[in-house]
Figure 1: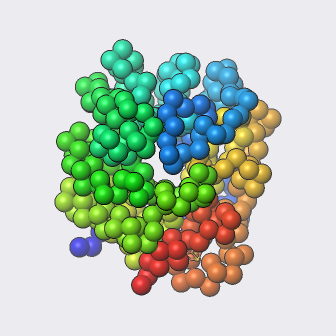
Figure 2: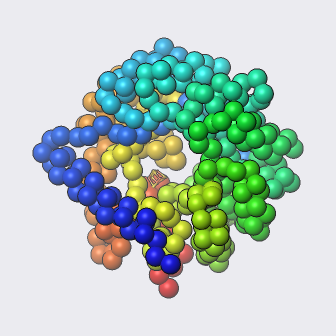
Amino acid sequence: MINHHYYFSKVRLQLFYKSFLFSYKKGSILPPKYVIWDCTRRCNLDCKHCGAKNKTYHTELSTKQVKKLIKELVDYKVEYFTVTGGEPLIRKDLIEIFSYAKSNGLKTGLATNGFLVNNKNCKKIAEVFDSVQVSLDGTESIHNNIRGNPLAFQKAVNTIKLLRKYSCKQITVSSVFNPLNLNDFQNLASLVKKLHVDIWKIISVMPIGKISTDKSLYLDRKEFLRLLNLTNKYKKRYRGKPRIEFGENLGYLGKYDSSVRSEPFFCPVGFLSCCIGTNGIVRGCPEQPDIDSFQEGNILENNFSEIWEKGFKKYRELYYLRDSKCRKCKHRKECRGGCWVMRLDKIQCSTSRYSLNS
Ligand code: SF4
Ligand code: SF4
């Protein structure tokens, strides 16, 4: 079956990409559509695949600093301001900050494990955030094992039900697949359907952070192909209810890209989005480690617009073509060098790692 939406999006994306690069060469840059705030490294859970707790930052932006940033984003015509972590709801000022963002016209989003959502605060959360993403990595025992807490599943499911009760505009379930939960895919698919969420986002772990030293958490080729095939099967079965999306973190997927994605792979960093870290440092996305090569500036020292316009050179000047493998690759027009996180430490792109063309 031809994925028409995918091919229309591909044309739209190419037009956007070409016109962005054309304007960039002439010295004019559009503001980003999405700004993600990585608000804290603190977390109330200890997931097997996440290293948030291991990274301690001494500083977090103050309420006043974030409100100043929000004012700047509004003036610069950014559309979306979304928050991730750690667990964002650990910050006591989160609702105050996002009420301010919303009242200033920004569209807002929250990614949470759902543990701190309850009957008292959910109504406000559903009002303040246009979209809420809740993590759910399996049915009860599997989710609790991965998340390291016996109550994690019940809390996440209850959060989803409360968000529906309070008419949250868009609810997404995000599931990170690894060898511990791949066999639970079909059970989780049924659960997600029963919960009547809008989007089910399927992600596979990346071989970074904790995973780089624990290969048992990383899908091998056979397992990864199974994940792609299951995603495709349920996309057809559910026909958009919920809409199933495959996370972009694994880059271009060769011949599988159009069967598991609704929109073609595109790394939005430097073109459509960027991320502001706990300490005010601007980098490409939350998945990128906070290392020098990903840092573009600090909002505590420079205006956001200045950092956006002067930074992100390697993305806009197509540095991926300096890599001889990418330069000769037949997928380079669709892939554009893939995911920048996967390029770290010479991690192969998914098409090579999983031999997706054979
Ligand atoms: S070689 Fe480069 S352009 Fe080709 S698929 Fe891999 S990352 Fe993408
Ligand atoms: S660098 Fe990778 S994880 Fe980050 S936005 Fe790009 S594709 Fe996604």
